[in-house]
Image 1 (cartoon, one colour):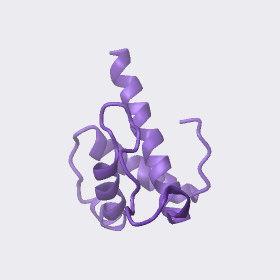
Image 2 (tube, rainbow, N blue to C red):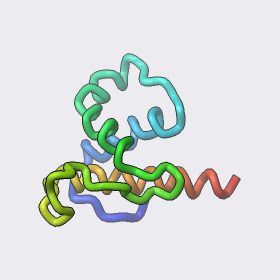
Image 3 (tube, one colour):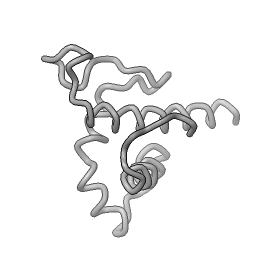
Image 4 (cartoon, helix red, strand yellow):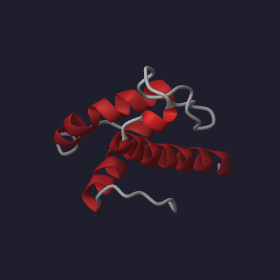
Amino acid sequence: MDGFSPTKKNEQWEIRQLSKAVFYGGNIDDVLLPLYKNWQFFFTLFNHIISHKNGDYTSPPFQTLDWVHQPYKTMLVLDYMKNLWIDKLIEEQKK
């Protein structure tokens, strides 16, 4: 993934590891379970607001707020997850 993400390196690693399990249909094992509990909100939210076909957002995460008023950290995490999802879509198209 080439995109810039100001989230901390350890957060990027955690999200990337969980994305491999969640996005590719794997199981969340005992090692990943504590991490998943920390990030479950974001994965659930991401699943509800993303178009699974092309990786675009279908709605703002918090629908009572305009896009410019979304929480900054939340959007950083969701954008990072979106880039990982798009990478997955690109890999699938190459097959």
